[in-house]
Image 1 (tube, rainbow, N blue to C red):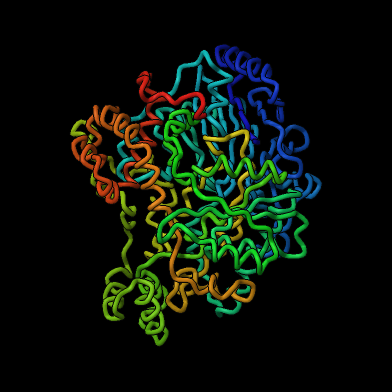
Image 2: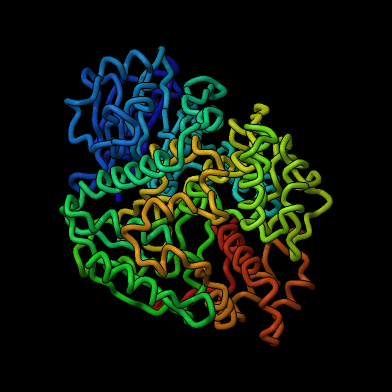
Amino acid sequence: MFRYLALIWDNAADSQREAATSFSRRIRSIPRWHCALDRIGLQVFATDGHAGANRAAPIEGDRGVVLGRLFSRQATPSRPTAEHGTTELDERQVILTAGDSLVERHWGRWVAFFPGPIGTASVLRDPSGALPCYYLRRQGVWIVFSWLEDVLEALPDQPLPQVDWSALAAFLQNGESSGSATTLAGVSRVLPGERVVLGHEQPRSELVWDPVRVASRPFDLDPGTTGRMLRETVRACTSAWASGHERILLRLSGGIDSSILATCLADDSIAARVTCINYHSRGADGDERSYARAVAARCRLELIERERNSAFDLARVLTMARTPNPVLYVGRIASQTDAEIASIHGASALFTGAGGDTVFFEYGNSWPAADYLRHRGLDRGFWRVAMDSALLGGQSVWVAIAQAIKDRFRRDLPAPEAISHPSLIRLPVDASRPPRLDERFVHRALLSGPGLPIGKLTQVRHLVHPIGFYDPLTLDQAPEVVHPLLSQPVIELCLRIPTYELTRGGRGRALARQSFAHALPAEVTHRRAKGGMEEFSTAVLMNNRALARSLLLDGQLGRRGFIDVARVERALADRPEGFHVHVGEIHRLIAIEAWLSHWTGQDMPAARRPRTADL
């Protein structure tokens, strides 16, 4: 799996120079690393990427390096094409703009490094945030990296990061931060679309790409035009991502998002051989095989079906890689099967429909009507949007109108779903009170009085949370994961399409459904129910109840007063019905407890240690 490490230091400072020399020597001693950029004060190392996919592209004269995968925008943002070499990259423009032209004229999954004035260098992360980018400081040297385990391996004599308990309190309350803070003290993240200059005591940063600015310029086009633009952009981005692979594995749930990708990958212009994988489990919402079969048959793609493994041993979670933030594992339980099937079929990439809910706008509420009032006021078109919003939110049209009037000038962010008042969490009095969502925990674009209508602001808030690129359970075995619907051109287009156009007709993702209806089975285009894993998650928890009790009833969250241990004990009682209310929250707390065991030096009791045979 493609990864990188970079060192930034002031060569005039003896201590930093000596530390950087020592760090560099250690990194070079590890065979998988090669030096992609070697300058005084800046060294960038990368692993070998899959041929045709991720790579390190130096700028002529060692004036910078772009890591990852880069595509070119041609005449229009809706027609992105693959960039197959540095010859098409205007290197002079890249240098003159300190990388800004990469954001304006290209897209993809990349991080770029540029040397700056003596003792400094800048890091620029692509707007999709698809390739992780973190940084920390040791002995005066800034270390920038994509995967924390690489830093810990290369610099084993350096102190381990410590848990930032106030940040963890924020994580418990509000979910993962979209800001620069992680839950490890001293470990920060470069935000999507952000440039960070390192070399000073304090990093200096600016947003080169601002999703709020993008969303502040809505299209005023007829539905036919926006539908065509959406269809062409999704197809072009999917084709570009597929161009670097001979064989691809597609997670085909049978939902609208993965089904749209299946139609794109089935196009005659796609040279890669595509195999689909569908997972099913018991329960009303766990079996979508009929939809997946219909899509695969329509697209003439091979379909493999696998039952989800409810016997998954949660002890494996205790052996996950060390990461800057806790990783929620339920959606990754099938990752080992993905890796095995990809290996059997020779697939170098796993494509998913992740992000479709957000870019295509799948929110059951009346916000589109409020957005319309904000944009256009009370004109003749409002009644149609009010009717759509009533259908979307499951309300009467009068309730939808009243709510729209109330929300049309609303500027605050809606509370995070299902996290605002979790029933098992009890933040301790000494946790500095519930932490305010300040600049450490919120993406900078959301702090500047954004002025967006409430529906579009909610869409932006969810899009600034990149989906993880690496799998902490099967890192080197895993195929490269690709989320085409979270490509920069798709994000920008959907940010500029008003929410009341994305949901025209009163359906979530309505524009996407209509744009691809001709290529999809009717039962998929018009399906109302959405698949889920609630019963599967419950079964996994029931099969691991002893481990869950051991972790949570005698864990650090309880000892530090972050959770109500008595309520957790009742939830994990022998009665199966105790799981149903709290199953998702219990899995989340187990993930956090497992993550804490890596960083706090607490020995794992023998009863909790995973058996070698289970790993």
